[in-house]
Image (cartoon, rainbow over all chains, first blue to last red; front, side, top):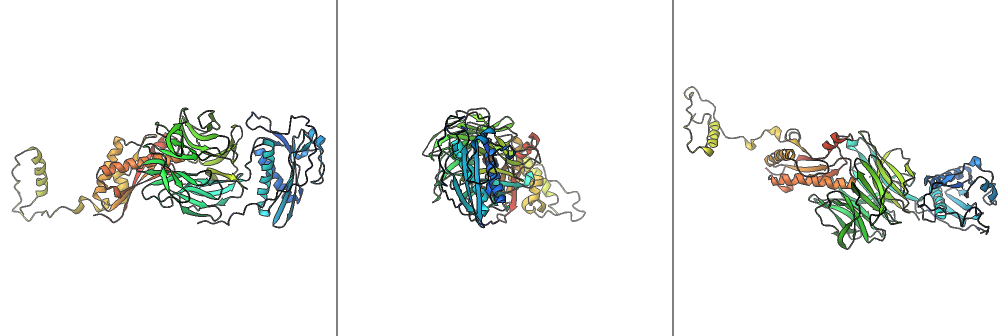
Length: 443
Length: 175
């Protein structure tokens, strides 16, 4: 087994209010504090000025860049280039020259200072609402191991995102995925974990057996996945900290795959195949006790829990083609929720916001789409030769998925799209990858 | 001497016996007085050549692959012909067991395709068992869309990838 050093312990987080003075200036060009409504038809990104951070020049520069990349990557913010700045700041404690920032139409200002003592860095930051002419929330200070400098940057960006959108954030989070190498007819796959932006890749399995579809546990400490290690597909559980796997299922003559945790981590819902027929089963993660949730001659797979843990959405071809169904954990007839043309699969229930993401095959094209649990408000977000496997950011605002290019040299790449469908972008990875699973926002 | 060329005669007799109540008279050997001739000393064990008892022969000559239409798991007439040959071979070579690998084309989601491949493998398994192959000699496995045999992204390749492949191996068990 390929091994990595254990992951760093949770970021030491010091939230110290650094004496923000809430000056009660009247709002100027806006009604109330600066606030972006993501679901509205935002066409003009909020202009943010992020002048060079103070303190150690090298550390300050790279942390500032990650904060800026996090914010602009959402499509909700644009950065005002440093060349356009009129105000020059000598220290973190300088007063804010609101008029000079207004003059270049900055709506928000981020200031920060990085200090370090060898193994540890400390980052203070403040956010200002330029048109209101006042700080937006208190200043904060984060302390992290020097090697965790990216996490400190993500924490700052998360704060800025939350304060400006009123929603929880997602930058300090990780994504599990499958790296794919080798020719299309003999793919080699291994599971990796990376920061949400593709940095800090850690390999979790070696390449000795075929592995598919990793799924983070709600606390981000474990990953369920399907492995052909025994020669036959079975579910394994991977401990992220120790990079060690152990079997979850080992059925003799049946196949187990498609596992997902319940939001409280107590249950594992998955697909079990017996005699060619695949149904959905529920397992107690602690005891291994299991029972079937469906009992049908059709294929039932890709289950996903609702955020309250009381229902699942899954894919079934009981109607003749694969469609999406919702059912309660206590049994009862599943309710079909997809009624459009084509084939639906891979449902993923958003952790927030009540939407279900899915893969839809329509003719020879594939789409990632979203709908409510009653099937209403269906919308396609993407369109390509082959898109599949949506996974939600912890705040339910962004979906990551696999896009496969056609042909003998075709390969999968990870992409993300926000739920408005406007901000589509490829992940910047220098290798082919598939099956992303977005983990929780880290504490 | 008196058994000269009997096997052919006997089998003809056997066939004839089904339809004609009166068997023809035995053939008189015209060379009976000219030497010892060739003596029949029994059938060869197993009725097959040693070279047939190999996984290679199975895949090349018997045919290890059956194909399926898009999204289908039912066996075509052509598939059943191939599977009848597979069953005959497996029944003849009891020391071999089989793993039927089900596959799907690349369109379709990963997990659904795993289930679809399992259904295809199972359809093959059921057919082989119905043809007399013991069920404990045939396992199934699905690779979903993970192991295409052709890599292009159009129907000519998809048709080859929607398949079930019977892989035999000598387990030493059986006769």
